[in-house]
Amino acid sequence: MTASARLLIVGPQGSGKGTQGVRIAESYGIPVVSTGDIFRANIKEGTALGQQVTAILDKGDLVPDELTSEIVRDRLSQEDAANGFLLDGYPRNTAQVEHLDAFLEGRGEALDAVILLDVPREESIARLALRAAEQGRSDDTDEAIAHRLDIYENETAPIIEVYSARGIVDRIDGVGSLEEITERIAAALSARGLRSAASAA
Figure 1 (cartoon, rainbow, N blue to C red):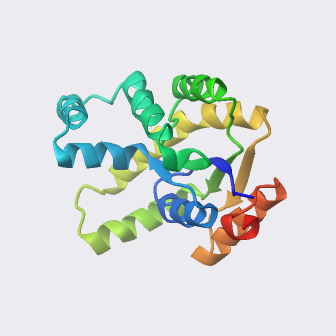
Figure 2: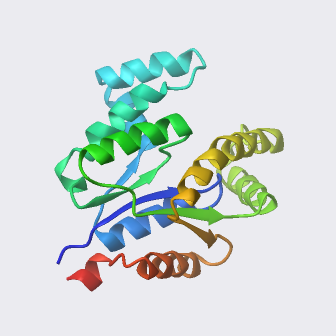
């Protein structure tokens, strides 16, 4: 039996979402599909998509929903995502939720679970401020951090409402050690009957 899990991980900046996403994906033997990573890789390689995204970002605009969804559809159609995937950074809004729903329904699939890393705003700000100091990032001012958290909260709340209505949101306490949080996520997914690659082997 092969492991299969179609997951979305959501959390504010500083929640440890990227680290936990990689851990869970490795456990289930599925790829992490991060729109940010895809954009950055294409920009670095100077692909047609990268040039298109660069032109949009240079104007200070956000990448349009349809283009973002097209990129994700292409990535999810690749062979390594056939048995599942972990989405990070997509869908960002309800329009993108509809795009993803339509794509998955066309394949007779649906998301199995949405992992919501719950981290108090004060904790996120403290973690980001510490990271900024460690990395010498002058752009991570308190105001900039607060603004990014505002955007996250405004954009993500409607998505969580949609997925909560479907009963697939697992709200995970995102405060604790890396291992503790990973174990909480694994326990929640196991309770849904989702089996990791090791337990499915």
